Image (cartoon, rainbow, N blue to C red):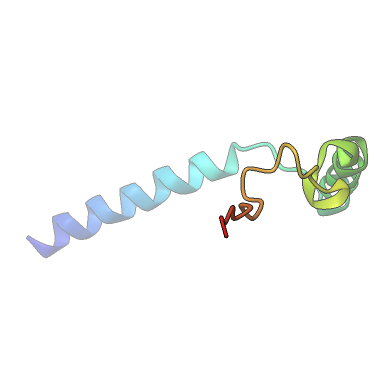
Length: 68
């Protein structure tokens, strides 16, 4: 029984390796250049870089109204 399960496991491994071998790969330098270009193109829309106006910020601190 263990022999057939071992063969089935090896077939699964071979199938996974064939799948991975068929994937298109991108060089790390090209991926880094693409990521840098994307970040630079979208920097003006990034609230972490440009900030959020207080009128549109849903997390702004609420003003407390107190009556004396």
